[in-house]
Image (tube, one colour):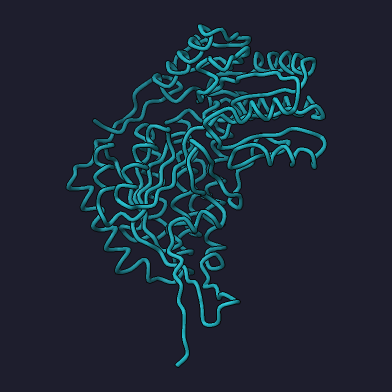
Length: 457
């Protein structure tokens, strides 16, 4: 077994990296735990922050090098790759610049002599996916490292070179051994790490199945877990929404990163049959015109699906939806070229009994619904086990906010497909998981808010 680079644009194998042995993994844990207890937690916040600042600077200086690995290993379109590299650097700088404020002791104004201080808790184990190989990692690494914790991180098996590049970033920035540890390990070995008392917190971004397993094991060991799982993000096109703008945002929101994003728009719900017909026709035309192909081509909008297995899974979802009565109005087939490419796809007439009604399609597959009333749109938006993000389009911002308040999700964006930023918290509800990353909330998930109460004698 190994971690393996396969170029999804060509389907060609590039390189593999063997799993670490149990001895290597637990030796790394010993190093990380020792570093935390004897060194890292005791350093001033400003000193830890300087490591993040240097990492951000190095990342910007080596922007091209880091971007090329994204395209090689997961087929990310070049301009989207640069966006991810830049956002990763911004997150490093954000926590470097704000950590002292976030971690400052807080006096309790109504309790004389009472102060709450922020302390790290130890080794944090992270299990992260392949779709944003740097952004997903930095959401954990930046806040936890600057808080005084140390991080051991298992990246997905198909992006090992991105994982190594990210680890080398902290080494080059001056983080001592054990502060950030890259793991090439198996699911079984991850279980052993969760069981080890020295690991004090666990975070996962992945599937419901993985979240159930990790959450159960962490709970059995009395360890806090942060889970960011599946999604079925609805976009509500209300009666007052300018259609042209909504269409533009839906196209971007469904096809960005080849549709392989947790907060990509997955479902469109249009209020009004006439507007629904107009929007479906326009989306059909726009999807048909999308250029699918080489992610290094400046004109390409849609690059490959990450792997043969992922592509076959999407094709099966499409076939199953069609067999259950849904109508594929655009795309639905593999592109006839080397690599793992799927036509941008639109599916409608999806009944509640259709498997696609509750599934997440992790690729450029858009589910399209039309309803008669706004109440029906809200009910349909919430008729899913997921609750990560939602989208509301309307010219009346006050009314859009009222609708947004009724969407069962961790995030709602109004009149835009999505804008991730270091300052905005990220996370979901229901089966999309729990806990938050980014913003001040993200740094607080794995710290001990300790009360110190002084009584004068």
